Image (tube, rainbow, N blue to C red; front, side, top):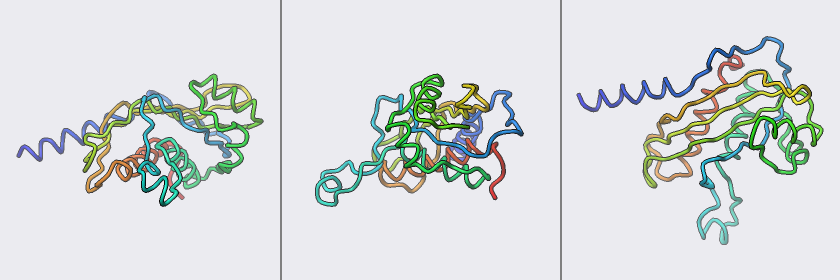
Length: 196
C-alpha cells in the first residue's frame, strides 16, 4: 500500500512539474528554429560523459554535458514536430559557443551571430539526482523560450517547475541524465505539435 501511495504521489508531482501558464502556441510560428546552447544555472557542470580518468585519457571520450544533450534532444523533438532545426555547427559558429544567460542575451547573441527567425533558449535551473549511483529519479526545473531574434519578442514559453523525472534501472548518473533529458524535452516541446 505504501509503494502504491508513493507512486501516485510521484506521478502527481511529475504532472504538476510542467506548466504552460496560459501560453498557447501561436499558429503563425516560423518553422525554422536555431537551438542555442542551453544555460546551466545549477552550479554543477552536469557531466554525462568524458568525466572519468579512463574516458579522458585512455578512451579520449569527448566531454558531454546535460546542456549538450538537451540541445540535441530539442533539435530532434522540433524536427519530429515539423520544424527545421538549424544545423548545430551553424549555431555554434554564429554564437561562438556562448550560452545566453537571459532572454535579452539570447536575442543579442542571435543577432550578433546573424541568426534570423526563431531561436530556442533553454534555461536549466535545477538538475539534481536522488543518488550518485543507481539514481531512480532526477529533479529537473527549467524553462524554454522560442524567441523571434528580429523583434526580440518571446513567441512561446514553457516552464517546468522542479519535479522528479523517473530514471528507473539506470546505474550511473550519465545514463540517468540522458534518460531525464530525453523525457523532459519530449514533455516540454509536446505543445508545439504532434510528432510526425
